[in-house]
Image (cartoon, rainbow, N blue to C red; front, side, top):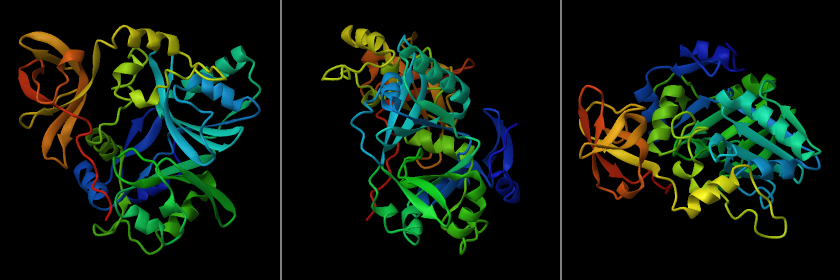
Length: 376
């Protein structure tokens, strides 16, 4: 298994390690529930170095990304991040990514760990087919990436920088840390405020010591503590955020996934007339009334959680399928997401989830399940 630059940190903090997308990663340190609660109440630090970081630079870098990304790239300003999908010709989702724009011809694309090789091949193939003059540099192994999430995070980093707390959501800045440059973005995957930091792999130990020099991360009362993949998943579930392999996939229409904001179907309008791969297929679906099923949220009665693949029924008829489910530590009830027939999305619609051994009563509810209170 691959190891991140923080592997020894995980061992030092007694993490329960598991294989994830070919990487040896921490599932939890103390417990998923405790780490989830710590992020919601104060702060957590996640090692997300397993996620791919692909540098795209050169004269045609923008044109390449415009072709593969469902969001507009040309109108991004320097220092801006943008969430986007990358689709196949059928309008299925190859991955969801975050694009960073450093300069006119200088971009970074953050990709899910399980899709790293696939997306690199895809970018290279599109580059060759379009004869785009640019380079694609996989910087995953040479860099580290950590996410700090929770209401205590911004006050914590304000001790080291007056600029970072003023960043708007989905903006980033490049700072000097002694002799190395670090990229700090105000993004995340938990529903909480926070930052994600990218820096050279060899500098991560120094950076951790500087950031937490007066914080004992093993102390239960510390403002921020390590958190693993388990809490990351329950947090993103409460925030109603899709996950590749669950709500997103190559056989799943991008218009079904609840992220319509990430689909610029009018990208071809204007002087440039840009198009993205899969755009024609998605336009056709939209013109025909939209997808047959779209993502919905559910509150599930009882203590048993719905699981991916369980069939959703109404009056004995199959009307959907569960994509993710878990007990919500914050709401103290079971929640689930799934694809549901388009006419059944009104909040309060009663359905049943077939477990194979019985049924779970459920009711539709708008996403997200949880929104973090605004600071102040």
